[in-house]
Image (cartoon, rainbow, N blue to C red; front, side):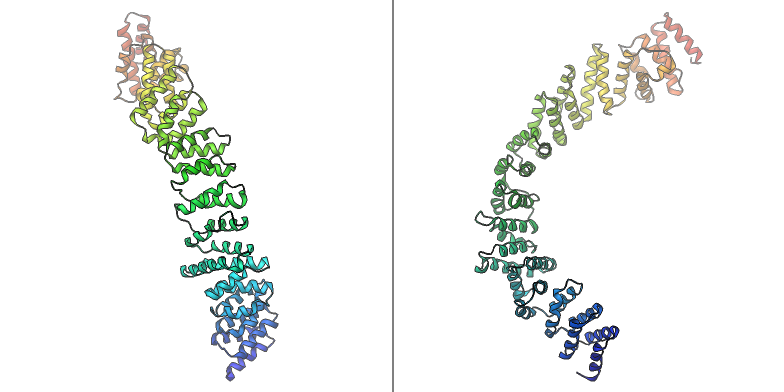
Length: 542
């Protein structure tokens, strides 16, 4: 040690924290590996009272990187202060070889020190460090085991794929060793560590511990590991062969629940279809729900029939899930469509209609036609069951719904059932399926039902005239000619319309005038004609 370094080192002995901190910084930057320097820095850790000084001393030892610092740093690992992380970094900076030094001290270390040593080993990695970490999983102190697992989990987040593969190989050897053959705690902890590796290669090892010959705690740990490790989007046959039978077991907390967690995000293969049908009747409600959800992955008549039975399950969640699954299965379209056409129960009809709605784009023209005929027949029979059928028809094709209802309304109009015809067209109005043709026909039906009150207030709120007020604004529609050709329109109807519109402005006034002139031509010598002339003169219409 040269004189300058000796003088700097002497500052460490001063009872002045600022001198001690400054000296530690300089010695760390100079990376002085002299034993006396290490010893003086170590004394600060052993005897110092100032946490800030200890922090600078640890920082200096980390930069110097000498194994002689181990005895001084090791006690810091037993503390729960912020200095422990620094102590871990100091020891980890010594490299993989530090594992052997720590191994020599491990047996005599306190439980708190053992927990700290395991944090260092997890960070150092390497063969010896990993072996020691796994051996620590056999510790009698549960806190040591938990701290070790915590360190493994944290360090594996940043480990390289190579380090993870090496750790997996060590775990496989550890689990197969005689030392842990009958050690349930060690096996359980090692299996939990599998889940931290983020390595799909660990799947086969975890699956090998799911058999009934293993303790429930061990099986549970293997399932938890499977739940946390990466999984392929599609479940392998090996995985399904091991996991699906577990859903039939009685131990829900340790076996069934974690198995569901593993399987839920994955797509199941064809081999799962038959077993899912059995699981749909499980004693466990969440297994039944799982099966109902997963059945949507199988586009078969068997799946559709089974899900159809669940539409009336006592559990509302099962009913909803069955509906959602049927919405996703193409085969369900034709099956449920035929059931809807035959259905006589309102609630079931609504269920089928809602399920079929997402399938609407795939409906054939023949299916749309049959659905329209069904709606018409139900309306003719005055059965409320038309509602779910019309809901579906409207969802599939608004144009088809319009045509079917308009056609029925015109048929009822010809037989002078104006009230029923108006009720039919109002269904279109309620659902916003309205164009000028619909408005016109609805206005005709409502006119035939109107009291034709001549008072202005009554006319302003007459729905028949409101509809005609919309249509009259479209010159291409030819409202006057359409009304002139209407055989159901009487002179009184024409007079009422003309009387109202002639009081308006622009096209409405012209239309009203033409209607009153039409009355003059139809009944020239009637009292209506006299009133029409008076109205035309009063409104200055020629």
